[in-house]
Length: 441
Image (cartoon, rainbow, N blue to C red; front, side, top):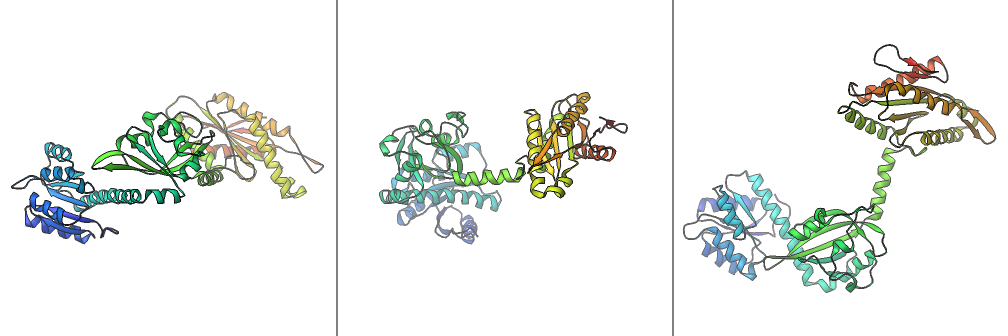
């Protein structure tokens, strides 16, 4: 049963008793209040006698077709709140055109599944509920607007702001309503994205909603405050109809900057290592997946470097875990200063680091891996007056269009690092698809 549909009144106009009975039972079973009429004139009598929200009208009827009733509803200002809907057994472009031209909100078909028909009625009901909310707000606008914590403004069809409540002015940093009234909202405060890049009017969803009379709910956007600061807001745009004519839109918005900061923080935490502040294994594997997909469409090759620190446990044992943590931080910073802008460096866990090297020649991958080994070997870790020499076992692998999977490439680099570690405390090992691999110094 449709939730809270009981306060929605539907008038079903159809000249056949069978249709009235079938659809009457269907809508009643789904929580709607139903009354029926058997002709256009009968329908007008019922409409004059009691209020309805939706009128579902059979198109073909003996005396007058359903589009006649649609036009009568649209002409009568007292019935402007009603949503007329055509129901027909005939799928015809001409019938659909005539129905919509007569003012029908939608055109339903008797042979469509009941679930689809009910879903389309439910969509109309949602619009009616929004419209009812707007009507109620308009009746008490002076009292409500001043007490709302959310910002609210109106936009005319000319795309000019017609009003803004005190909360909206405060959120955006304005003192008086006349500072915004008559201004184009796009030009005034949603002209650019969060990073300052232009938000062209022709592709701006808010502008399209104003223009087309569309409903836009729970839409995150960026509003620019009077002092030039960007602000994340959540908007709800509802079209405003007067006497059946689209006259503009009402927009409610609230500041969600704190929420966005929390979301951004959670997203950062999900993809970064809290100790070194480097990308974590999850970020690294996602980046590796993207690079793998890119190379499938390219003749380029990329390298993957896997670094395993050798003296990490010794530092932990000798100076404590705080020293080990500081070592990881400093090694991360050391590697960060060496990589290129397109490279991806991540802490994979424990004392292991990974580096993706996009677009490198296969013959150069071992040399680059060797540079990282030398970089670490030449670094002295100082902690509370004690000096520690640190080395790394470095493994490298190749990724190109012939690679089987990103997981395999990572496993190959890990295997190469393990092989290097078994042979010496600080060596580079290259994993190649053929042969036993290539060893550096």
